[in-house]
Image (cartoon, rainbow, N blue to C red; front, side, top):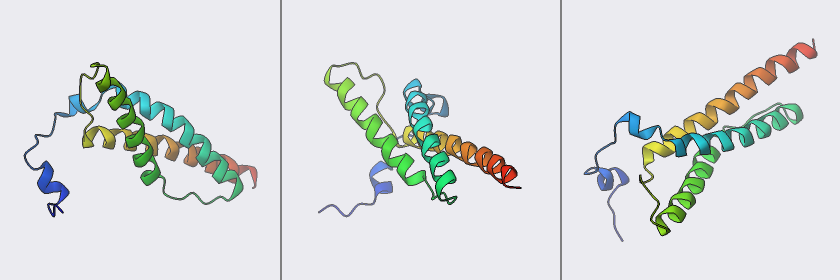
Length: 115
């Protein structure tokens, strides 16, 4: 069993510049999952009014979606850029931000309608 920490494993890998982290792939996945999470947030807000933290779910879904995408493209030799931890962070941030906007907008409209 390997006892190296994750940071130790990635210590020798160079972090790509921020321009390379903002890929079309990351924005497409963020857009699709952002729409999904927006509907989930609106439904939860209307039914139970309490919204759990969705960043773990966003990170996991974004990771699995892009990992499958890159595996498929790699199989056919079409992969131009590997999937990085930074790319996953961009996806997670976009999803949580879009669902947060949906929650904030919905909370204000719902609270005003009950006044």
